[in-house]
Length: 79
Image 1 (spheres, rainbow, N blue to C red):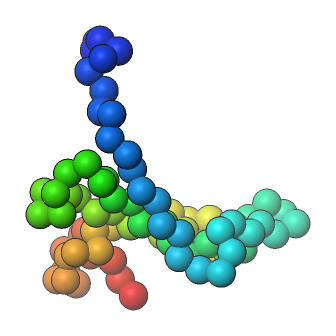
Image 2: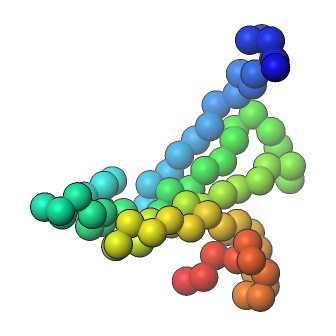
């Protein structure tokens, strides 16, 4: 276990892409949320590990790395 003071005091910045942050259908499915970008403002951009969380219309979720350009890499964010 960790002591309470061992956590990070940094700030995580979330950027939501799209017109509406989150919209749901009458059945509770996600209707409109394309992606959420996650980055840390406390470490340098060269050491930062950007993440993109994509939410599909059916509620499926995929986490990828927007800095990976090789389509065969499992971390790749497909368009």
